[in-house]
Image (tube, rainbow over all chains, first blue to last red; front, side, top):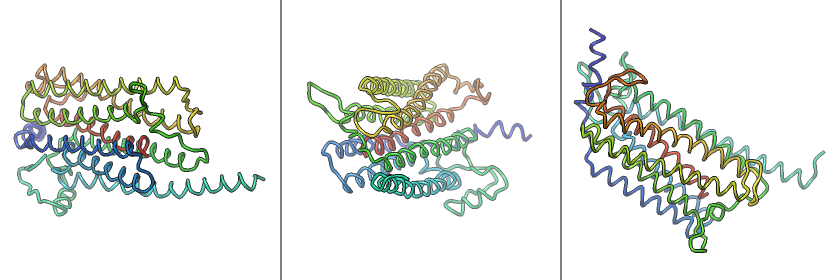
Length: 119
Length: 236
């Protein structure tokens, strides 16, 4: 009994899966093209400093979000899956924070000992 | 995808739903095929691998006292004698996004049981991926010809080469594996394995168009990683 239930599960799911309208995919597709074009323009016009970095990050996160939400269907998934996938990203953010402090220290000690001279 | 229903179990929306799904003493991911859940878990672990690469790149680039090579000059192509910055990389980005779009549509047509459209779109995705890998081979051979090595290069900080080959190499490896599977699935879709529910060679599960979505998740992830590599390695 349990065996047959398991076998039928994929079929059951299939009948209930309602696909999204094609328009939403085309919209996201177009948006990704436009955003990629903009991020290329950041380099083309040689923006520098904070403007460059903030624009790069803005377009990057927007593109990544669109791909995950709509192309990878996370927007329509249940929270149980979405949260399992997104919370671990905080660990990566912590790691970035730590390594950011680390490289500044390494850079500092390199400059320091190149000037002062090693023992 | 949307509006899942499971007999004898009330699916609540939002965080309440998350709590009841997780504590339901059954399968946790309601209405999600086990293959899809496993692909997501794999992609999560892969995210960590790529994050470690990019974070080590951040650390290496941040702590070197030698100037980092100017990527928009290193990766420029000469068109009619004029150097165009990042031209090849921009084309690669557009090719990968195009293939991501065709994949998304292939998943949609797969669920609608439109065998022909699904097959052609997966084939288009595979061709896009192959083009991407081809351009990456061109880029690598050009840089190797110009003297970029994992231990040094003529443009600046010595760490540039090792990070470049490691990060784009690992990404290109993912794309290559994806292309192989895209061709296999093109054959499987056109041969009607998902309509006849023919069992697969890998897991022996009955053929089902959900496999196209699982393949699509992998392919979109490859595109997703490229978004980060493009931003941090090429543009930064």
